[in-house]
Length: 195
Image (cartoon, rainbow, N blue to C red; front, side):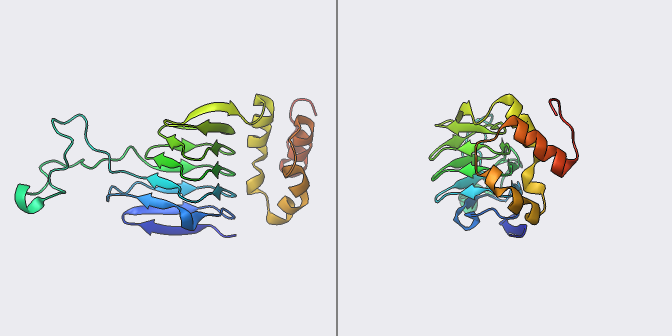
């Protein structure tokens, strides 16, 4: 249940407490140094891949990686920036990533999002969205805007384990706005509209 830190090649990886399936993730990188951050309480299925770089340059005359392949024949890289990365990958808290999903560099997946099996995530996914397909697109949100906002304020994953244990019954049921307001008041000391 602890935060974990490790590296794959030049890429630092951090995972929040209580996330599982981390040993199943295949991280691909080519020395660009992009980071992967995974939040707390994430559920990661078999065959998930995160590509932190390796993007070929489509703005150059050739996409071929001269200087990285057959260096003995063609010499070292004449210009830096190949292969390239679009940036770090940030996966929020309480995210479920389905079997065989592929997540490309430069993507942020919001808290509570669901990434369907075999989805190819090429752009950001909003909190509490369900994204499917290739390229992944949001097909629906899990909850109403009001409930989503209250869940984001509550950020239950940041509560102490003993407090989380007390609210597991609520976490394991459909969220209601009024109940979330009460939890916010109890655990965050916040009054929200309607309380």
